[in-house]
Length: 420
Image 1 (spheres, rainbow, N blue to C red):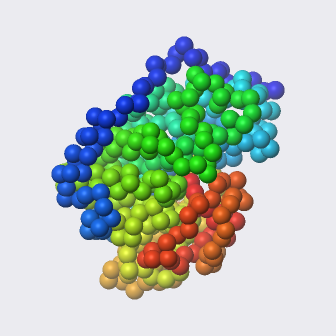
Image 2 (image 1 turned 90 degrees about the horizontal axis):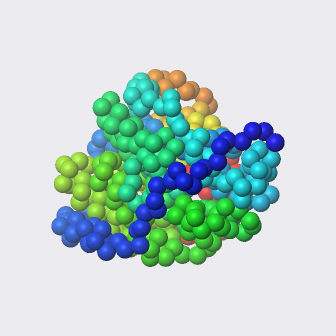
């Protein structure tokens, strides 16, 4: 067996954070919602209008970087796949690092040092590529926060690189005159590590419950404590970093999330009104009511010109490895979007332009990412189940038939999930 990295030393860890009583924090959130102008109803939130800067900003950069960059095997779902018996990641992990009970996902954290991370250089690169907005991951499914959080000891600020990675990059993006955003993938953490609860692994060790947990079955609804924590972590990102793009991955479309989503949207829009800034919430599936946020079609496009702005994230290649970068395009009502397979997603800039079937913008040429456009076909209804490409649980709710974007095109990659 190859030499494996040094394991996490339990004695080096900060004390766990008690987040069991959220009464005061929730009261503060409600005060912002009550102050308006938006309240936590779909009727009120329907008054939202996407910013003009967002409609005109045709190119943005989304990026993953986290503890999964250390094993650098497969993709950013390593923390799940390494605990799923029979997967390539599981077999690789046992062969390379030993049994999961002896060397678990947490044990990669000491090697996640990021000693060469230069946020200023990153922001300069994104600006040269033509990006108008940048959306780093605040927290991925693995539960390791890349920002400085007061709600968990498991963060880049307290272990690993021991710096506020998300905050440093956000400030560099702001200094470079681009719009800063944040993406949250926390919702899936409800079930993400549950494979490790099915055999003898460190996921079952109570010392790590605050990192690996809840690790529940994905077909069960999250409980109130998890939903409160999800809301308050998101509020923390909003208040501490003031992102103008808030991007959510799948699974928030679960019915249990509906009340906290309305509260979160009202809170965010009201805070933005206080800041004097216009903001965007991106979502998948039917998580938000039509007109209350901006719809996101990952790795796909619409089959027609739509009357509302929407967004298409497209990866630079067929898969990801450790660090994942995606390009975003927002499409305004009078433009169409086509997704190049080699890393940027651009559209005509145009309320006043005629839409073209295969548009290119200067952002594409500046990024020097060229390549052929995606082969796409209209998607068809698929049953519930598992994504064949990555073994991901599919969203159990179909998209609403009343959604303004009912006809979409999907990449022919065998991955209908559109999950990140």
